[in-house]
Image (cartoon, rainbow, N blue to C red; front, side, top):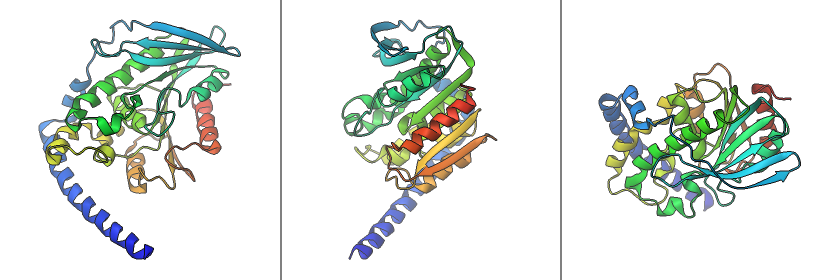
Length: 306
């Protein structure tokens, strides 16, 4: 019975995929002809000289490491971004890492990688960890699909602003910058990195090659074809191909949200000559000790840490 059920759902999935590919192909061809990549860059323009208006909420010490709980302005007129700055003791110069959290059932906010950032501080790293739009409770289920286009633009700009904050922070060596992004953070981070060189090295965790892979798992848009056509400007592989820097991709062998096809498409789109892909017996959370250890080793080597 289970085997018959499995075959049935596999047939349904393949049929749905074929219809989706047809819809996607029409939308992407339309987008590539009417809106070439050079024009898409203008969507994400922002004022690099704008004041961050940093407000310090509080600070705490963990040994010699200081965690600053702050807010800063990403886009004028929008809600300030909640963030942590994790700072080691000493004069530096320090390497820097921007950390982006996943959308999941726990630690779906800037706290996800806080312990790792504290540990990396002992090796000479200043970290910025931000709350993304999916840190809001019930964001995915309550979001309005027709607003995804503008929300995606805002999120990419806010990630770029967070990177600007990190690079311009005192005692940060801008030649030794890293980015770690899990799930949606990795995908939006890839868009940001394709627009301009943001970092020396990137770690992408449990990412897939298209935002469409997850866009329709909750509320459905009024018109799926119209949705695909409008959001085709965010075609991830277009941005991934322009990304500069070394890349480490961490994928799961049993991820219900990221297929091996999707993860391979992401990895194969990377043009970097220094890239590595590893798979783990872990779920989408990617919380295994080996996952963290491999990530740390990669960052230590790529950012010339002690």
